[in-house]
Length: 390
Image 1 (cartoon, one colour):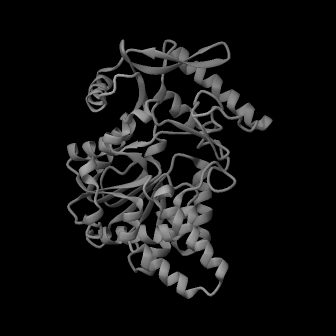
Image 2 (image 1 turned 30 degrees about the vertical axis):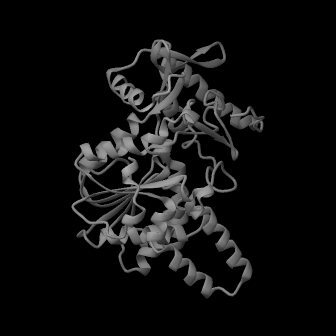
Image 3 (image 1 turned 90 degrees about the vertical axis):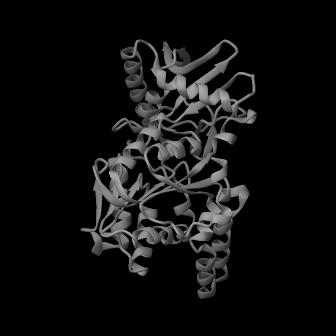
């Protein structure tokens, strides 16, 4: 990416970033001078009190660093809810478990839809690692649904066993990744070290698990030029744990990413890692520790392989636009348009639909991987299913 000038942080933000950098340097020392990038990313995003998602600053919407689909329109949740209801109606006393509920907008809108559809799950569970986000979620959800304080619960860890529906909307892209660099001399893991006040990249040998992944990548990528790519070991471990706990139900993973056949194309020879600071994207994760989001595109093929090895059914892989349309988005939007006489409201709704559905917006850059166990996801459209790409 072209170099750009990022806004200067406020002094109090710089102090937080400096404190986090010192903790990172201590972790590098404890790791014999080379910290795996996945561990570095974990500290930058989730270290209590200092990490990007745990330091208490606004992350979502215009005041934050990014806008998610639930912030664009409640129609996103309305369509997603119908896929959830399709699954919940097949499960006795099924729960809904949302990972990383952000500002609580998606949960609020989903619960509204469940009430209207008379299919409220036995519990709406949220697994959230950030105390500040938990408080924001409670305020948002209970402002709309004050009578459901006993139905909506926050969890500290994954239940050991449950039946229900799992939603992970823009969660996997924020899970720490390992980074591999392929050169003519071989493949190394990219790690983080420091010289004085500066963090920099370094090489370290591959673990056995990364060696296996490197072989898969080399088989997929026939380009002999040097390149860098990410390995989603954390996301795969997360899905494995989820599969062990899910007795019956569905998992909907909504995120931006690619199947493996597209993940390693020559135009992505520097990987998919991106950083976001005050709505500006760049590619240097070794600055602004704790002040910027760090993400990597999801490797949906790797998640699908993990799901299959854990005896989950890969029920569908769709562009977001096709998934939402199968959830009745067009009909829901038409009803809302017809019920509103305000031209400005109609224009806002039309603009939101374009962002959710158009290929150049979120319509095709975002995908939905639908997994299941012992139920049928009948709303998924077979005509638009892209499982053949996985």
